[in-house]
Length: 366
Image (cartoon, helix red, strand yellow):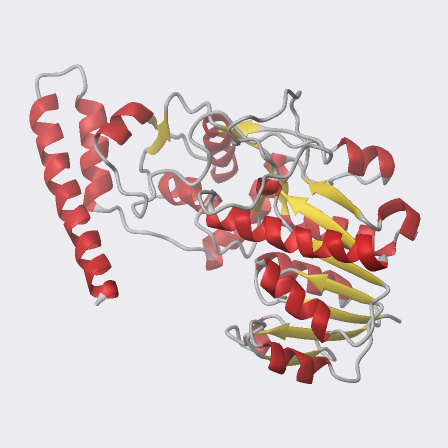
């Protein structure tokens, strides 16, 4: 029996991790904000403390007098989150597993080194600077705190860097983007020719990997980072076809050039596509496969089948917005005499949406 601390645990990755850990007779403490009712996720016998992990005093009070064999940090985003957690632990755990992100690599830097895809764990991490994406910066900050602690005091940390995670309980509108449109006989709009590639990892496989690195001998994993990925890539077009096969329907694919979206000044708040629109994300799975012997158990098709069954019952469904209807009409009208009027109608609705966003921004600044 192990004493386990889970930071997070109530949603998606943490929920699946907690469910798997609870299959063994562990002493489990879960700390999160308490925004999800305990009955929705907390296993019988697990203890829960509701607090804001940004509150250093509350964290120290919650962990006073406690020691842990394992710490799983699923909710840590920033370096401050990680530092507060380390400062609050009265003694180092046997193993600290931190969920980071595949976005920490410096693939979009001004002068990235020459490299071969897929991206392995020894690829440089991007520097933390104000012009970078906030999420990338934050995740890099969390990793830095842990690597510094390992260097200075041999702190027993392990980092797992997931790529795009999908599956049951996903509260982010990603695979739901495809399910929603195909299920309701709406076309799927893809940027470019649908050749934006991403590597996905099924949430249950990721939870298995987190548990795997927690059980390995220290010399196999401590002080190291591991990509949490299947090691295969799928394009937007392939994704849509796979989702349609799962649902058992045909899918209509429509394409729009990225340059045209930029020319329209499409606001980022009006998400047009939930994944990388062009190029791609390619992460190497050879380290987990060769060093650990770890194998992801789900093909994309198997993972999407489970994701779809959950989405049917619990996932987010969005209405067919007027803006998307006008965009579809415009794409279909290309090459016909009605393209001009279709574009005008699209611009009118898009301008109205931009005005709403501007008004909301101004209200937030007042």
